[in-house]
Length: 229
Ligand SMILES: *Cc1c(COP(=O)(O)O)cnc(C)c1O
Image (cartoon, rainbow, N blue to C red):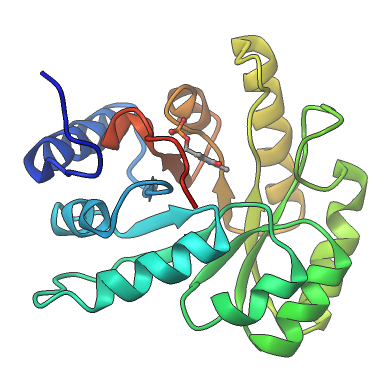
């Protein structure tokens, strides 16, 4: 069956979301919240997954989120409004336009962004993104810098809820598990409460290693359309 691009099958999204919830619970993930990653999908995808009970959505691109959120909130029947988690590469100059929309800034990985958040969004809820796999071109701070960034953010009045990480690009299960385990250990050592790790391909390992927020896109919404904006 071919699908018209941009047309959202709300009942298929709801069914896949509910299946995911059941699978997470079957793995013992009572504490786990699902962040439905809606990047490149239209506002109707947000509405569909929120109506199915999903508490949070995740977006990666500032301008896309600003446009999409305006269209989502302008719907005649908005329905449940999910928390918005920003999970993409974050530049300081995007913070201002995102601040009225974003509830949790998951991808904070450097001082300049912390300073800008403290200025534009006092008291914001954040997570520090850590590159736990040593891959050179990957977002996230060095594990050695986590503690000082958490300290800086806290001094700046931000609320650091936990750490966020992306598993190894090659998806190797042993490397994935060890990366997730090391991030969970950092969260415990720092006395934080949230661990954002696990995507469509590796959320099971993440839940086993203590994730409290899994960020799942394609397993709920299907294959992502190419980015246009
Ligand atoms: C796109 C993205 C996801 C979701 O990826 P899927 O493989 O579609 O589940 C999760 N986290 C981050 C940081 C992403 O960029």
